[in-house]
Image (cartoon, rainbow, N blue to C red; front, side, top):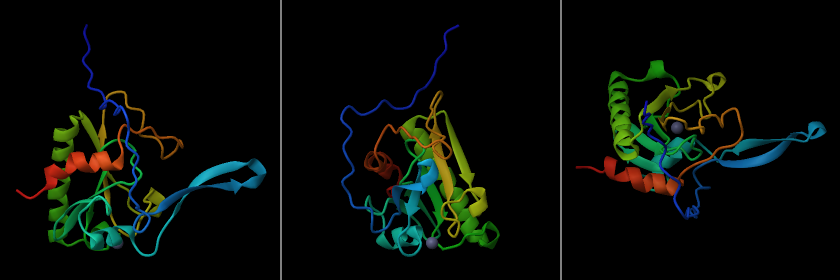
Length: 190
Ligand SMILES: [Zn+2]
């Protein structure tokens, strides 16, 4: 029986290095030795001053801020450390880390923007599946627990890139810049 599988977009022939300086807004990753006795290197986020999402919001829509789309109550940001191509974050514009403290208007705006984000990813990446999820609180795995953010991650049959959370390697098909340029038209105002 013939099987048809949709696969992740093929790698660009000559990936262009991301030359933008994102250090002013976004946390940096750095390798360091956690247990010298075991020569164990781990990767740690070096966070800049303040909330990275609020800083990005202030910087406005653009590749430098990684903000793809902004509305009054909700926004879409590219994940600087994507698990897979097209990994986006949908979040409230207000600095809030507790789902139960969102107003009805904020919750509605977020739900609608989540749906719009899924639609944009399906159309631009032709992905047969997606992970949509919220890590609520630091112990649940939220990297920035003080500002709620939903992960929206395209998935393809046979992709193997989803586990850098626990493994330490990630293989990405495209740069953040390519992702931004691919998705930005889907969020431009009509
Ligand atoms: Zn914030």
